[in-house]
Image (cartoon, rainbow, N blue to C red):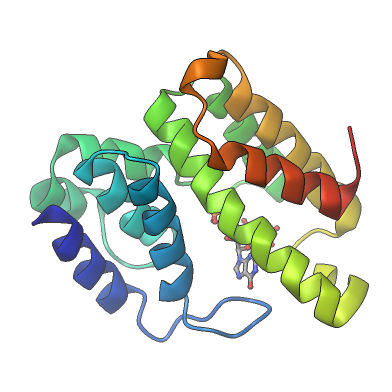
Length: 182
Ligand SMILES: Nc1nc2c(ncn2[C@@H]2O[C@H](COP(=O)(O)OP(=O)(O)O)[C@@H](OP(=O)(O)OP(=O)(O)O)[C@H]2O)c(=O)[nH]1
């Protein structure tokens, strides 16, 4: 089944990689993202993309390999969630925000599931370590606030209230708690 195959493939490809603040295996993040999408009732392909969403950006695995192993829909979802790391942080985050505005519900759902785990982790780490957490990232508090707030607006943009998955509310609450209301 595609979910199990994606899980095993991602675990192997990201082996040895750690999350920046907690130092836990990177795979824990992929598991959390996939689980959020599964619990929200998304298709097997979307859940598989949850496991694979950082694989092109952060490992040596290529889009051709993902396409051959998991098919077109999965590779498109993964590519939609991949940034061009050769660009400056501001430029690539701006590109991510702009693309998210007109993305499909499935792509928006993947972005929001990713941000749910990142912001939940940030809240937990901030309670433990305070503002030191921002030093782990390429940009500090102000730019992280700009990124998360604008990306959240972008994923809500164009969606009918009736199709917004319930966990989007949790992302919004986390972002407000981390960065204040907006
Ligand atoms: N909260 C948290 N985030 C961590 C941790 N370790 C790695 N990250 C990743 O760090 C990224 C943000 O770091 P930055 O320094 O601002 O950006 P960059 O890696 O893209 O240059 C997030 O990715 P992103 O830009 O949001 O997108 P994506 O790469 O996850 O798709 C997040 O996935 C961690 O311990 N806690």
